[in-house]
Image 1 (cartoon, rainbow, N blue to C red):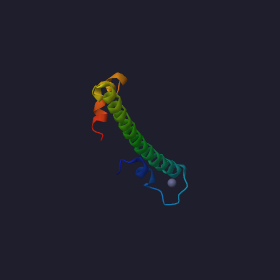
Image 2: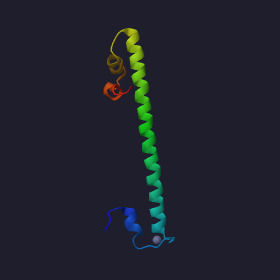
Image 3: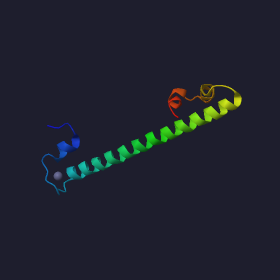
Image 4: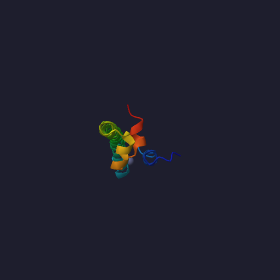
Length: 86
Ligand SMILES: [Zn+2]
């Protein structure tokens, strides 16, 4: 038996069944899709944020004649997250 809750809920139900269990399974699937989209968007935004931080650290660091990691430290940012960016 599958340990996926949706598969288990659907096991004894036909396509088109309108019981509350099948409605719940549909809702769980919809929420899983939404969650997956939100996680993808969050990763994309974190990458964008890290790149913006990296650029700011480089520009400010170049202006002051210090390494970007010093600027990151001043702002409480993890420079390792930004270091791998172009
Ligand atoms: Zn059902």
